[in-house]
Image: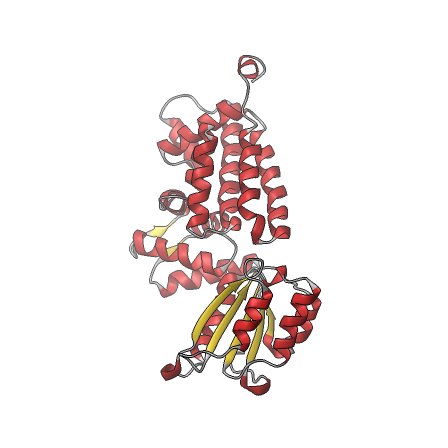
Length: 340
């Protein structure tokens, strides 16, 4: 795809879909097609932040310092206005010589005018991996690294990591590096490492939620967004925590906790290996009550849909609203004394 000829020596591509890893590989292929002695000057724009008129002017104006240029327009699904589409499609139909433009979106569709303007051979949708492909991808990854991972370990990683090969490659690389080649990586290893390996993560955010501290929860969220964590990764991690909360509450109601050594095995069965994590779930159970896990999962699903449909502009606000709704479920003193 990197060598697709386009009129007048310019090239335009449209890469859509949620599979970030394979999309990045396609971009790397295009980068690799440039003459090493003439590396392109790269510029990135975010639709919705930079006016399309400014983007169009930058595309059409030559550079004083490079004769090859590579432009990215991210969040391309946000380009919808008639005048913006006319400017951009006019450029795509007659691109500047020596200039490569790549339109990127995590959505599977953009405005029809954009899709029609890009040459058919330069358009591609990168779909999320099917379950069997993800498991196979992980087995191949660890085999190349000289490591071993069990089927249960693979299942744990797939529960905890965002559904794209970029996130899988990053987290599997960490697992391989820090757990080493001698150890068979099992479910408990993967859960413990992925839950606690990063200074700030969805799991530390859940710990703030479990304590009922809204201001620290918002602070943790902003740290994640500042580190360029996607909302899919944040919601995926929180979803895992909410499902563990449901497991913990079922365990607490079952009568299988005796307060003795046997409890350790029961906790490990539901993925709560560390004392700190158990304390978080006890606190969340006391603070939010039974049924909280299902409420939280329903809210996360609702806001996942809203985030996907809103584009990047509302991301921070919507995630803050989600946290406010979750923490508003704290029990009153009356409820704690009564039916809770």
